[in-house]
Image (tube, rainbow, N blue to C red; front, side, top):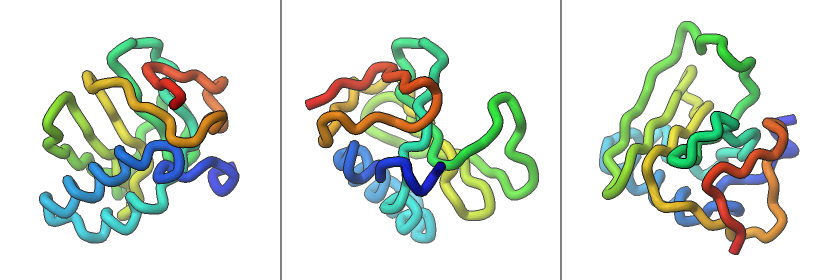
Amino acid sequence: MTQDAPLVRDVFPDLTAELVRLLEEEGERDLVVCALDLRLVAECDCGDGFCQSFQTHDHPPGRPYGPGHRMVCLIPERGMLNLDVVDHRIVYVEIIDRPAMRRAVAGASPVGAGGAEVGVREV
């Protein structure tokens, strides 16, 4: 299912550019390459209006990531932007308290999570 999901860089190019810039600032060069190829697998369905988080790889809900997991906390100008990384792969992008993201690709919808679009608007 992950390979069929849209590329984040096609749906949210501004977010991808920001991720690349912030990862470079943090010295996370290996993750810069990962950020360019992220897929929008499922958007968070928590229902909180301040959350725009999404999965980039399939993962069972409520299960810990286990060995090889680390969190990379980035420092954006507004809100929070954190990455769950497992074995050098970005598996989840946590986006909290930030302006609503706009989709660059009209009609691009996530795969899974019932297509929830929390805080996300099409252009």
